Image: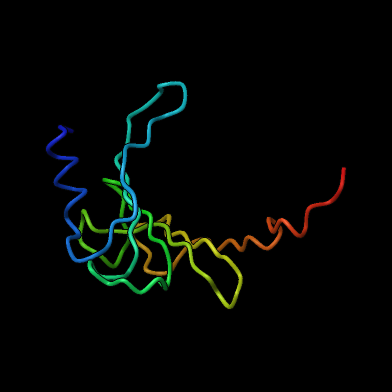
Length: 113
């Protein structure tokens, strides 16, 4: 994977707003680094502060409903006031495989030690 390959992948969703991009390096330098980007469903130039979720994309990973290079295996959303992480860990399954609500991670739930 060359720097040009990574740059091309970062720019392959020109209509969506990219919120962040970078390279996820492995712990202890074991394994390959993986380029990532975080996008919203908003189109470029949309100044509305509201979005329906954050989408995490990793180069080489995808989901069943999109073409290679454009898949999104992770979405973070607000589900009725509850933050939820939705994961499509099986590229051959259109339905998500995991749904995690972060209710127990609310700071208001912290118990005094």
